[in-house]
Length: 303
Image 1 (cartoon, helix red, strand yellow):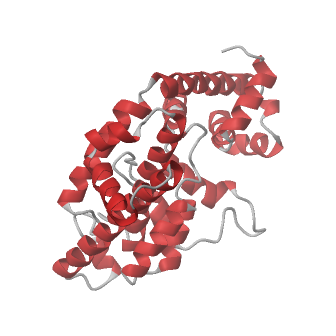
Image 2 (cartoon, rainbow, N blue to C red; image 1 turned 90 degrees about the horizontal axis):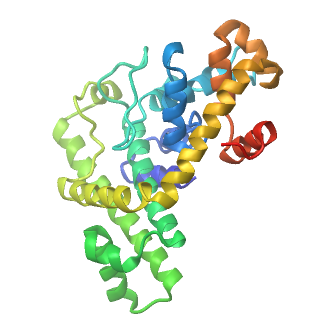
């Protein structure tokens, strides 16, 4: 929802198709497995001899095959442009492989907006979570991350001393606003300079037109490196992720040996797509909490 709101704001400022940008943003992670990118890595490893797993391709599988909402055809009744946006979803931390039928150099402007909106939301949300958990601190962020320091200074100058929760919220809000303004201004200039006149002109561009300025990109890279060092690779976060990976591996192998437990629709689909892919689809559609519940049902507390 946060990605969709940010995408719509950027699309509106650039006078693009707001509905298309929002739809891509809402659907961009439909194919994500439980436990985020860690789960994606383990499913890809388990499926290495059976076509692999990549969450953008899985998003397309969800909307083109797995959802059964119409009697006349599988999947959802989505436009090619929405499906293109899912196939070509790419951020600084997420690099999909190619997909037949969506091989243009660049995606639509609306898809590019959704990509940047995802990145903006991803890091700002992780800042909030890191501070809530105590794994990050405002003092260290102010000393080591320029984008935080600049936003904190702006909030202090405009509002004075604020209560902790309110101050933190407004600092993160200020960071998001600054990124959105930068993307809008930079992208307007890039579109004018490129002299594109149609959606197909955009797709022929060698690089995306929706981008940060060089200065903002450097600030974001600094923030990203700080989050990797102090949050994503923190043992408090990393060790539970490793346990989650083991849960998924054990469940995957268990379902291969007990295919009667993956549900009637998945068993039926396995006759056409193979048991490995059916099991992969079944696990990919789970929530984190359901994986833990199902693992506990099958194995107890065994890890």
